[in-house]
Image 1 (cartoon, rainbow, N blue to C red):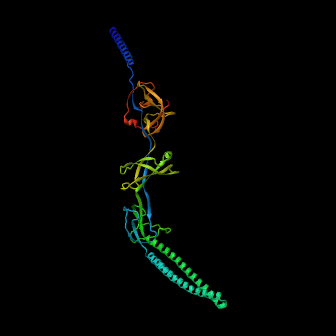
Image 2: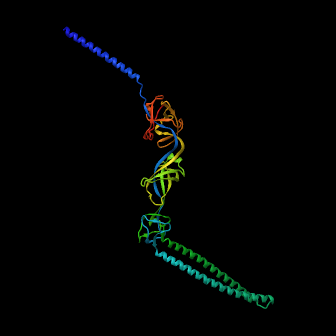
Image 3: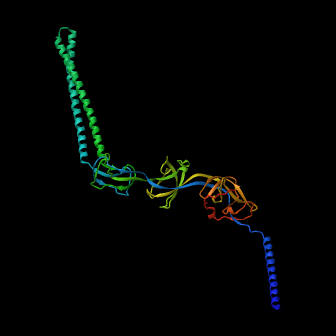
Length: 416
């Protein structure tokens, strides 16, 4: 029994010695850890620099023909010949189709005959004037002779005879005036006949349908033998072809209401056509000066030259506007800015310590931001992880990766 008690006492002493040794070792390890300085957190930085920045707006636009019309016939008739088809390029004044209008040809012939008849009538009336003038000359000479004899020797010529001669003289003069009036009326009728001839001749020319401008036939509506009603006929609008001017295209795009004040004639844009891979500069030519109530956008147009017809109406393009721009702006990545009552950034000073700097913003680009006050070129700006840093804290800076600089944050906010 005594031996068993001694073994228990020995075991307890040994356990006490082991516990004491463990606690002493743990204490010395904690003191050693306390003597080791904390590691400095690594931060990504970008350097503030001066350069070009632009506030850009990219919208989708659609190409449309510069002008596009349905070509009608001025007169009604059957298509005798049609010379174009869909996709053909035509020149201004080129014949597209010829109509057959027999009744119009008869009207032209009648108008020509009317002119000839009136001219012959004028010639006949002019001969009448000459005859009446000759008669008047003879009668007037007879009256003059009797009048002179009566004046030289009163009573030689009977008064009745003198009065008859005077009456004949006046009647002959009236006949001359009447003949001249008939000639004038016939000449007026000649003018009417010529006007009618011009009208029907012009209508006959309308039987030949020509292109009003150079362009491309985008649709053919009729074939040979089809009856084409006159384009002026109410309720009848059968066209022959559809013609579009495509060597110059209108690129139309909607500009949001908030950006309307920054768009004006002459604004420079960059056009990217996804279908062809083309990219080229352009200039705003016209805009609606009216914001749509339905979409709250303003329609804007850029004229694009298309001499080789590579671009086609209906294609889409991305149009980028430089709404505001500056060449010597102080620029930092937009992802470095913390928004609040006043935007601020964290930067690393010369001792690699964190500093908070409040800033004033200027033009905003896609991934960058102009700073008009609060920073200077060369300042090292911290990108990302601002919430885990404190002012005065020492850090280990290293250059930010390009994807981090170009990251677009979702409105960072802070209350510092």
